[in-house]
Every structure is written in C-alpha cells, then in structure tokens.
Length: 244
Image (cartoon, rainbow, N blue to C red; front, side, top):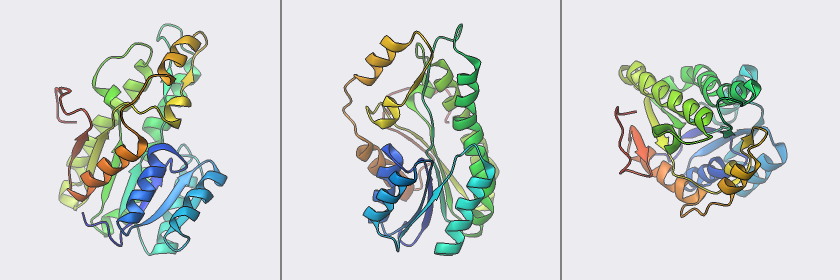
C-alpha cells in the first residue's frame, strides 16, 4: 500500500507503539486520526505532526459510540478512511487460579471486543477505498507464558479473528495485517495490570531489558503495511502451527 495521502485511524495513539506509528505514517504522507483516552497526550502527538494532518478523538475502545465518532472524524476532516490500526490494548498479569475475574473481563473487553467494535465501525468506510485493517497482536500469543495466560489468550484470540477476517474480506478488496511485536520495555509494559500478589513478578517484567523500542516496532509495522504483508513477526524464528 502506498501510504501517501491515506487516512489512518490509530487506537491507543497517546503513547508507545501507537504514538510511534502515528509519526511514521505522517512521514509517509498519511493523515492520522489519533484515538485514546488521554486528551493531553493526544494533543501533544497531534501538535508534533501538525494540525492539518492530525485529528484527535478522546474515547475508549470498549465504547462503540466513541469509535463511531472517530470514524466520523476521519470522514469529516479528511474525506474518508483507508486504514484502521487496532493498537489499543492492555497487559494483564496474574495466576489463572486466583486472578480476579474483573481483570480477566477487562482484558477481553479491551483486547478482543474492542478491535471487533472498531472493525464494525470502520469497515464500511475502509471498504469504499480498498483499504487495510492492522491488528497489533503479540509474540506472547504464540507460546505459553507464566502469569500472562489471560493476556496471551486475548492476543491469540485476536490472531484467529484476524485470520478469519482476512478470509472474509479478501474478495471485498480489504487487506488484513496481523502484527506480532517482540518484547518492548515501554509504557505499555509499565502499565500492566497485575493481580494482588504479583508485585515481584511485575517488577521483574518492567525491569527486563529490551533490544527494541516502540520506534523500531513502528518502522517495521509501516514497512509491512507498505509491502501488503498478511503477517509480520519481529521474531521470525518462533514457530507457528497455523499461519495466523
């Protein structure tokens, strides 16, 4: 996909990979609709890009009305929508035998239901322009990981959703890209929601060194979009039993 002149809606755009993707897309000549809950951070990102190429919408991916406002903003400000990037997510940590069910439900609502709501709201506009849906999954979705079963399961669900959506939309001219970034010690990791008793494990997770940055991931993701890839993994040696 040639991203010059395209209109892209990015969820979770107030920090981390989402913010970095916004900057990379702007470099490619795209206009961006930045969607997240933190108004101040969204305005900072939009100001860095420039008001003529960036719009902000404060909202929550769990709220269908908020998402519809974001899509409407893309149409009103920039004339349509070419790309949806489902980046908003939450990391959940806890032992399955004791994790509060509220944390489980929150993880599924943000990481699974949220992207579905976004697809349902954005697809009518994306289909008009033969665009693309990008779902940001995780390398943790490809292997079992102690204390991260809930997070890994939500991202594994997103893999299957992406693969199924790809088949549903292939003949309708809409491409679907699934992305598996490697571990990045960024704001997303530091904001992991941990169950009681997980304090030491959370400290170990957030203090782990990372050879990759949000900017590294964003460059790779945008390159995969330009190449019309279907799956991008930062750890290509990690085996997949199915091409998700």
